[in-house]
Structure formats: C-alpha cells, structure tokens
Image 1 (cartoon, rainbow, N blue to C red):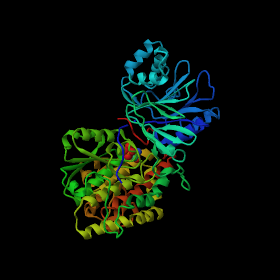
Image 2: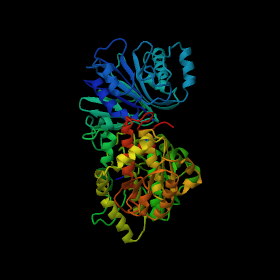
Image 3: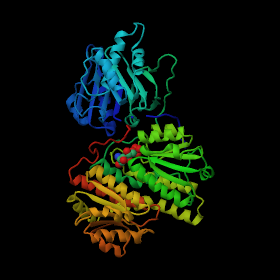
Image 4: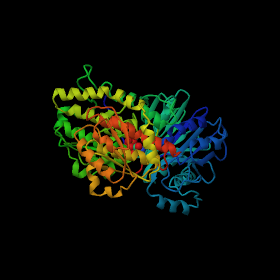
Length: 617
Ligand code: AGP
C-alpha cells in the first residue's frame, strides 16, 4: 500500500467541536490528546443564545485536573475549544494556559505552534491599548483579531478578520477561535497539524486523528495556509480558496486503556508479540521464505542503484535507524547512513539519486519533517516509515510503509521501537540479493520473533528485581554493547533516563577504555548487552574491564558461557538470529527502565518535561 497525500506541521493538543454536548466531547478529546503535552489544560465554551463573555477554565496539570476544576459547569455547551499545553513561550502557569481571551472576554483562542514575530506583535498590541496578561505568543492572536473585527468594514465577516489576522503572523500555527454570537469555529493551519472530523451529529477539529476514533467516521486534512470557518454545515473557506475533501477515517480504533496492566507503558511493552505480528503480516510470503516491503516509489532494482540511502530520525527512532544501517550494510552494497534529524547535512548527502527515509512514530516530529523537506529541496527522493496513519510525514513523502504497531500512548516509545527495527530489516531483505539460504534463515527468525518476545516477557526468575535493586541505589549507570547492540545500548539508556530519571551513558564496549571507564568505581552499574554473535568475545573483554574496576554488571545475554561469572545479575534472553537480536534484547531494557521508574514512584507514562509528539525545533 502506498502512502497518500502531502504536507508539513507542531506541539500541544487542540480539540474543538460543535455538538450537542460540545464541552464533554472537548474534555474527552483532550484526554486522548494529552500525550502530546501535559503541562496544563483549558477549555472555552459557548451555550445556545450565549451573550457576553465566553465561559473558560484553565489549569496547570492534567486534563483530569481541568475536569475537576470545570466541575460540570460546561455541560450543555454547543460550541467548545480546548487545549493541552507543552510550554514553549512562558512558564507553566494558569495564566499561560490556553484558551486566551480578548479583554472583553467575547473571543477565545487556542494555539499550537510558535509565533516567531511575537516581540514585534507584542509592541503592536500594546500600542493598540490591549491589556496583555500572559507571557505567551498565543495571546497576541486574540488581541490582533479583536482589533481587526472592530476596525474592518461592516460588510466583512469574522472569517475575513481572522484571515487578515493570520496574515500578520510568522512561524507555525494551528489556531482555533470561538466568539460570542458566532455559530462556528474559525481555524487556521501553518506548520502545525489540524484535522477536521465529521460525525452524524457533530463536527470536530483536532491536532491528530486519535480522538476521532470511536466518534468521527470521516476526516478532512487541512493544509498549510488554510483558514476556514467550521460550522454544522461543513467547511467554509474565504473566496477563491479550496476546502479539503472528507475521506473515510482509516486506522485501528483503540482506547487508551491499560486494561489488566498498571500503566500504558507496561501494556505497550507486553503488546509487542502482537504489534510485531502486525508489522510482519502481509510482508512475509505465504511459503515463509521471502519478506518484502511494498509502498515505495522505487522498486528493489532502482534502490540497489541508488548512490546512497539516508535514514533520518530522532530519539528512539534514531537508534532504530542506526540498527537499520547495520542491516542495510550487512545485506546490501548501498552506502547508507543514519542521521539525527536535527543535524542532517542535507546538502552534502542528498542528490537526485539519493533516498532519504524519515522514521517516526508520530509522523509529526518537526526535526524529522524538516530534514525530509531539506532532502527534497536538495533534489533527493524522500520516503518514510511512520506509525500514525495519515500523519504529516507520510502525507509529505506520499510513499513508504506504516509500522502498524497500533496507537502508542505512553510517552516512552517501546513497541514502536521494535517495529521500526523490524521494518528496516524488511527493507534490507527487500533490496538485498543475498543467497536464498541466508534469506530463509532471517525470515524464519522473523517469523519466530513474536513468540520469542512473548517468552521473554513471560519468564521472570527474579533477576529483574535484583537488577532494579542495584540501580535503585545508584546515581548513574553505563550501558554498553557492540556492533548491532551498540545503538541498542543507547536506546536502553534513553529509556532509563526518560522514565526513571537516572543519568545514563551509553558507549560501544570498545570505546569504554578511551575515556568513560574513568567513571567506574566500586558499585557503578554497567548494563552490558552481549548476544551470542561475532562481537561476543570482545564484549567479554569489555565486561571484564568493568568488573575489574568494581562495576556491578547487569548482563543481558542468551549465552551460557564463562562470561556469566563476571555478572552480578544475568537477564537471560532467548536465542535468535543476529538481525533479530535487538528486538529480543530490548525487552529487558524496557522492563528495567519501567520497573526502576515505578520503584521511584514516578509517572512512567507521563515523564516530566516530555511530550509524545515533539513538534518544535
Ligand atoms: C522515545 O521514548 C522518546 N519519547 C523520543 O525520543 C522519540 O522517540 C522521539 O522524539 C521521536 O519521536 P517520533 O518517533 O514520533 O518521531
């Protein structure tokens, strides 16, 4: 299946709707969008025959805090907009939370993105006599709009005033506005996502499709530059502008419900046997001998003739990309390199015969999106591997493959990492002309992978508890691996820092002696990933070097050899092939981070300062 459509994108979550119980729907929509940002939340609502100032409520904290503060006051509202915030301009305070209202309270605005000319506009707004209350760039929009409405000709509409206001802005935005006396929501998009959803009795807007599942059957994707008025009748555009068509909402409807698990992160770790089955499904031939990815503009022969492939990604997705580089180098002759998207040297590595593939769970990460756009400007081809169906990156690249991990709600990525690794292996198999026996072996490993992962998840001999107790008393930890396990050690360290706030270093085993070994003192935890592959003898040396200096070694391995005697704790994994080992070995790394976070009493699903979609640069 090829991706469809095209465009770019931002952070925070916006939800709005016109419906019989608009505010109830907004609070529910915000709950589903909370993973995008959770510093603060707020909503504004208009009732039938509403006069005077708009009802609003805002609070720092979670959507549940907003629900408590709202205390049913918004029940029965007809039109409502809401926002969950990840602070960029201004600290985390009630006043900086959205919506922001005009001085007379009759206009309310929510905004996602960054207004780059905010200083200039602040001067303008102050000179016009407005009382600016927050430290945000977003509040300026409401005052500019108020001024436009009061000064434009009488023949003009609120949509005209909104369009003129938007034309004053520079930067990125998704904006939604409600006004007393207006049976509509005004919306604008530029570099931050905004999608319109339609159900039989309501019309909604949201930052991504997630909150539409279970409510809306059709969606219309806004494009950059769009400025619309959303009413019960549909989408109204200013003269001579096109409105997007509604299309059927695709993808899997899944509630954000941890079920029998205590947290979403744990549920998603345990989802992996199923999510892996989904990414492999339809991509392994019926005879079980071949694996192939479809969905690219280029066929395998054309890919083999590329000058180079660049993989661009951030965070966890970048480590998956680095593992993908191992696969592509091992199995194809193509020059391939992984880049942190925020450091992508497009002009040096892109040409008409290069392919740059963006890897992203959310499909909205601004750094990755920018890297892909730079690759295209530099004349190269672009493609992507994303999880969220219909998100900005797959729509921009219009070819690539979905990860099919199902929605991932916990901020720390777990199941999607595994699917990213699996899909890069599928890409290598697609391009490679390796001998049949080697190919069959890898495909067999892939087929057995979901069960191997399930076995790893099931078996607990108490070693994990022992490893957690070593980490509980530590101030930092060092992760090491070699070859294909080197990027995996970085992923293990990232997960630990994200959910357990433990400062961690990750180094290829061989690099330790060139500096970081100076940090090891008696009791320093070293988490060593040592599968039975060609790097094992060298890993054994690295582990020995750590042990000799008093490290507490937590060893992740399928090996039963003499190396075990250097370990304080062994987290045994099931043997699998070289290429599939990162997916088996990531399980104890994920569980270790989760368990340490829990033992420290942390909110593992919503770690501090983070958000699920990082849509600012
Ligand atoms: C993963 O645990 C992190 N939350 C983060 O590093 C993430 O992988 C990164 O921001 C990229 O996100 P994406 O996959 O949505 O592009």
